[in-house]
Every structure is written in C-alpha cells, then in structure tokens.
Length: 408
Image (cartoon, rainbow, N blue to C red; front, side, top):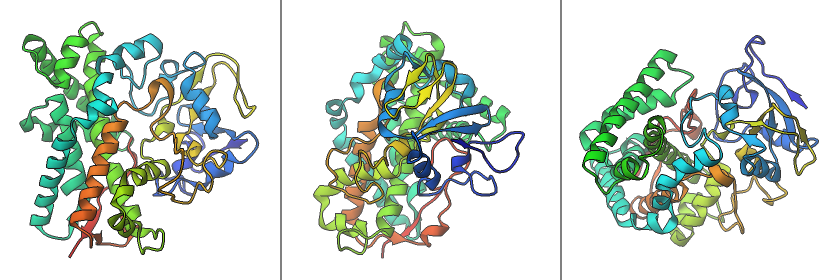
C-alpha cells in the first residue's frame, strides 16, 4: 500500500498529519488514515516524507519489534531522515553508545526514585494553582499552570538557576518549533542552549552538586562532550513540553467527553479520585503527544515482521506508537475511553531500549495535577468551545497552544 500526500508533489510531506490541502494541522484525535492502514493487508504502508519514502508500521506487535530490535532497526542510521536534529542525544544513538548515555541518569528516573519527589511536586502544583486562581478567570491552563509546573519540576531536578529559566524556555521553544522557525534561528537557539549548559556542567565538575547536572558532570565525565551537553537538553525539553502538553490535552478531553453516566469524565474523576492514575494511563494511550512518527529507523537487514510484512535493508521504517496503541488485537474497543482497561501496556512511551526515560515522572506530575484540579476546581470548564482551541503546528510536541478555562 502506497500513500501519497496532497500538495506539492516535488516535496511531498508525511500525509498523516495533514489536511486535504496538504497543510500540517494535527488534531485532537489520531488521523483516521492510521486506522485504515493498520487494518489493510499487513498494516505496513509506504508513505512519502520530505526526505524520501518510508515504511509506516502500524500494528502493535510490529511496532514493538521495530522499537525492540536495535540490531535490525537503527536510529543512528536514520538520522538523515529525521525531522528534528537528534544527533548525540539518547534519541539518536544505538546499542552501547545509547546505553552509555542513558546509564548516567536512568537510576534517578525509576518509579522509586521519582516517588521521592511527590511532596515537592504537590507543593509546586498547589502554589501554581493558587497563583492562577488569584489572577482570576478566565485563565490559560497551559501558560498559567501546566507549563510552569512542568518547567519548575525538571529545572529543579537539573539544578537550573531560577533566573535563567525564562531564557532557556525561549531557546527550547524555538528549537522545538522546527518546521515554522527559520533554520538559522533554530540552530542559533540550539547553540545557545549547548553553550550555556556546557558552562553549567563545567561548574558542576569543579564544584559538584546533588542535582542532575552534577550527576552528568561526574558520572558522565567519560562521555563525548556533545553527548554530555545533549543529555540535559533532551531531559529538559522532553520533561517540560511533553508533560505540559499532555496535561492540557487531557483536561480538554475530560471536560468535553461523558463517562460512566456522568456529564463529563472530569465529573466522574471528582467522584472517583482513586481512578485518576488509571485514567492518566488510558488518556496517554489515546492522546499521545510525542510525535514519535518523527523518529524513524533504518532497516539494517531483511526482516519479516510478526504481521508477515517484509522489510528490506536500507529502507526507512516509521514505527507509529500512536497507531499501535489503537490496535484492536491488543486493545478491545480501542476508540472507547476505558479508565479501568486491564493490561494497558500502550506504546505511547515507546518500548525497548529507547522507552521514555521520564515516563514515571511525567505520569506522577499529571496524576498530582489532575487530583488537585478535580479537588479544588470542581466547576472547571472550558472558557471557549473545544473546537476553537488551537493546537500546535510545525512543532515536535503535539498539544494545545492554550487552554482557556473558567471555574466560578
């Protein structure tokens, strides 16, 4: 099956996040074409991308195999097909090189290690919500609550000075908005971030501190300098943008979808707060914002996937975690929101060696935030119609640009 994109035939784009006019307009829901491809033939389709053709893989077991098998499917060998510059990051390395970077910090992101930060996250969330309420309504839940909470959490863990965080956020947003910002501007932002962090890491090397930057400076001292610097960049950008965007999306969904006899799923969680952790897991399955289609692999050998699809050496392979997480072979009634879904092993955080390092931290932050919101703002509602809420375009992380809310 070959899928072509509308628009400029000389430079066709990956079609699945475009509208009929070929404009990149990601929506709240996964493009139905993913589901069509998944249920056709082997669920593998050839798609056209800015850098050439690729094989889109959409079934759960196939996606897991591509993500798991680094020997057969290389991230490093596919960097020339990336939409975002990920060289020297944990997202762009294979095998021992990837493990060497990841091992520097992985023990700080285990469930037990993350749980130790619960009290601090609860205090930050309560303080940010109080500030938002005091400023009055309507408020932008993204700018006034979700982003500050997520940014403060990861910056505190890293040890980033408070006075530098506004500047770092500006650099990060420029870097992530890679398709709507001029290449020179994005490169300049990346260089500025790298230079700034190189200075902080050198400071920690001279005067160690018990934070993530201190850990990277000491435990990661044998890493190539570029990988030392790109590790905190990956942690920071992923840690704040993905968490904030997920929280915004989940609140939008909860406020606009009925659930279990309640007018909204938000109202259901007010009555059943014990279900919030499971609800976050299900919402993450259905409304992933990672843009993982932008991180292809290159087949290094001939491979037959569990579906029977055959991939040839040299082919670009795009494992769609979003499509895989809707596979009805694994998730009965995949389009139905089921908070108590058993065995909800979705792929939104990836799988195998590259599974998301910060998944436990992100889950904890969103769980705490939703618990606080449903407890303190039981009358929370959108201040504009849901269909009028703008979503990010040309951005590495999907999600709402802003989320106007009221609560009185």
